[in-house]
Length: 123
Image 1: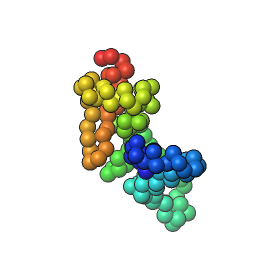
Image 2: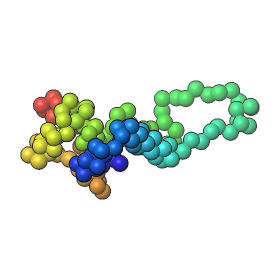
Image 3: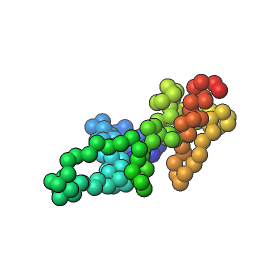
Image 4: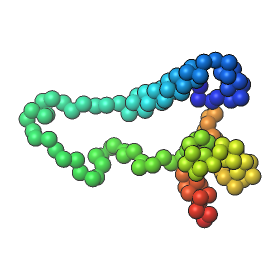
């Protein structure tokens, strides 16, 4: 349901509005599940907890582990439109004129965060 085009939206106009809302919630739940699966939880071993006091984590990352970035590196068209305060049509128009460069990965079109910052600040 991620790519709701005009055809899909036209098909859903004759349906109960709650079905569309349910699909949005399901998509959100699937996205959350994908995040959980991509970063599995590793509980601490109980024997370590019983013998040693809890340790305070330092600001430096553990060896071999990467920290998640504080913000996204790239945004989808919808996310970019929401972040900048424009409609999706304006984002597509800017991409078509070359004012807003984007990248395509698989079937997804993404816009880099620094490109959006430059668009907003005019630099």
